[in-house]
Image 1 (spheres, rainbow, N blue to C red):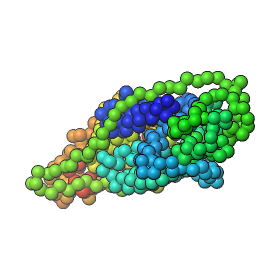
Image 2: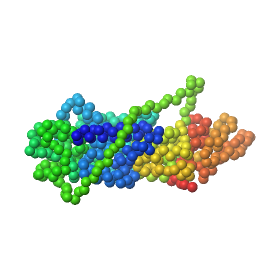
Image 3: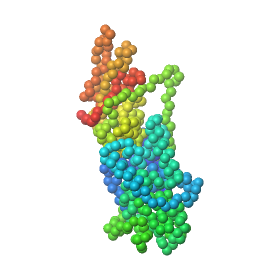
Image 4: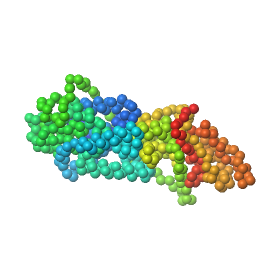
Length: 462
C-alpha cells in the first residue's frame, strides 16, 4: 500500500505542476498555483510557513517530499523505473558521499545568502523542472540548451543509479536529510522474519539499505515503498514502532514521548500536454525584419518585483512567470548575476497596464502580487529616444506611434528643425513613464526601435 499510495500521489503531483507551467498563460494558476508554493525553496524564499511544515513532515514521515511533492524527484523515478524494465534487482548499498553532499549544500546556501544566481538556478530542483517543461514550447535557445542538458544528465543518472542526484547533489534533499534521519515513521526491519535475501537492497533506488546488516540510512531513504513491496517475508514495515535494538537502524532513535502527530495534507491533480509555439508567417508578400532588443544599461524587471536586486535574491528562475505572461514580454535573462531570472523586453509585445499575471503565479515573492491600480502607479523603467533610429528623421515621414499608444501620456510630439524643415518628434516626460514598453514595441523602426525602455534600479510608486 505504501508504494501504491506514493505512486498515485506522485503522478498526481507531477501532472499538476506540469499543467501549471503549461497553462499558466491561461489563468489556471488561480486554481492550482498552490502546487508551486508548496515547493521547498519557493516556500523558503517567500518566508512561508509551508517551509516549516515540510520540515515537520520530514521529522514525522521521512523524505516523502522528495518522492511525492518534488516534480524533479518524480521525474527521476520515471527514468529509474524505465531502467528497472531493462535490468531488475540492479541496485546495491553504497555509503553516503558526505563530502560531496555537504560541500554542494554549503555552496548552495552561501550562494543563496549572497544572491549568486547561476549556482542557485542550476541546483534548485523545482526551478530545473520548470525550465525542462517550458523548454519544449518556449523559443529560447539558452533556456532550451540548459534544460535539455540537465534533463539528459538527470535521466542518465536516474536510469543507471536511481536517486544518485537527490542523495549526492540536490541541496534540498541534503537539507531534508538532516531531519529525515530522525523521522518518527520509517522503514524498519523485523529481524525475526528477515532472511537476508537482499531483495530490498537490490530494489532500493536510494541505495540506502544494507540487507546484510539489516539497517537503513534514513537520511537518504525517500520512502518510496519499493523495498516493502519486494520483501517476500513481510520483514519490512513502514511504522512508528520503537525498535528492539540499536542495530535495527542506521541512526539513533528520537525521543518519541515528545512528539505529536501531524496529519499530512492531500494533493489535488491536473493533467497536461506539451504545447507547441506558433510560427509567424508573412503571407509571402515581403520579408519581415524582426525587432531586436537594445543593449540596456539596467535590466527591466516586472512591476511588483521592487528592483533587480530583490529579484536576484528571491527568484529561482523556474520560468512560471515567463509561461504565464500573455504578452510575451518576460524572458529568461542571460546576464550572469540574474541568470535565467525574468527580465522584460518588448520585441513581441508590451506590458499591458491591466495585466498582473506574473505576480499572481510567482511562488517565491520575487514578484509581489499587485492590483491593476497599483501597477499603473509603478515605474519599472523609463523611455529613451534614439534620434538616429527615428523614421521621422531617417525616412522623412510623420509618425507619432509612440505618442498615440502611450497609456500614461508620458510622450508628447514637439516641433523640431531638421534639414530646414519643421518635423514632430517625441518628447518624454520621465516622471509619468512607467516603463510598459508600448512605445518600444509599436515603434515602426527596424531592427532597433527609435524609442526604448531603460530599467529603473529601484522601482518607484506614485
